[in-house]
Image 1 (spheres, rainbow, N blue to C red):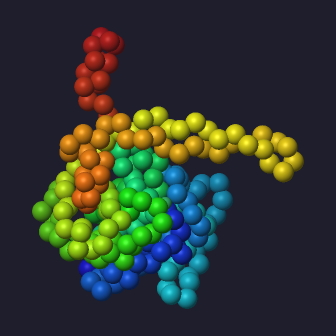
Image 2: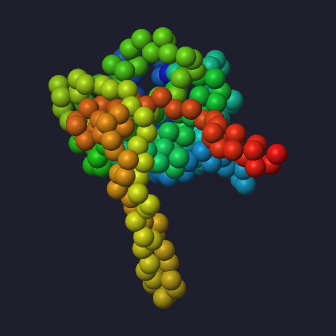
Length: 245
Ligand code: MN
């Protein structure tokens, strides 16, 4: 098995190192990841400047671009053959509900999926990397499960509680929940007195009922959500047809 690994926290992040170490025991791995933290970059591609690929001493490739750039360039310019799987993460912090639209971690997996390759995005629920080795062991277990019985290619979003490996034995299939609106923007000023803004943190979970990713992880379970990319609102489409008639 050949696995392409990327992330949005950058090629030096503990999460991608732990993941690569575990997956290297079961597959041929290639790591291609941003050269800096590009969290929140969603599916953006860099089109206004050229990109450079660097190779680190440990063999990881880094690119001065987004997670989507990394997977795109890996698949079209670095790898000789298509990988069997694209894996992203392990992200520092949860990607649940609406987070999945902003997430560069999910985007890296999505880029593989858009090329017709099965893909999995992994995130740890809490910041700080606690139990990252345990999360990476679990990620390896998930890669080894019989996911080929799913419709392929599949795109899976996995959120892992920061717990010891022995407590990560419940993996549940979930749907995305929803968050409240983001917290307010943070206003400040730069050293020259000019006004500056920091985007505020995401809102708290709003739709966290049974069956959602929020519900599962709040119980300490590992959450796995199958994602799709078609944003068409089918019932609204029918209404729109009636309106335009
Ligand atoms: Mn991140």
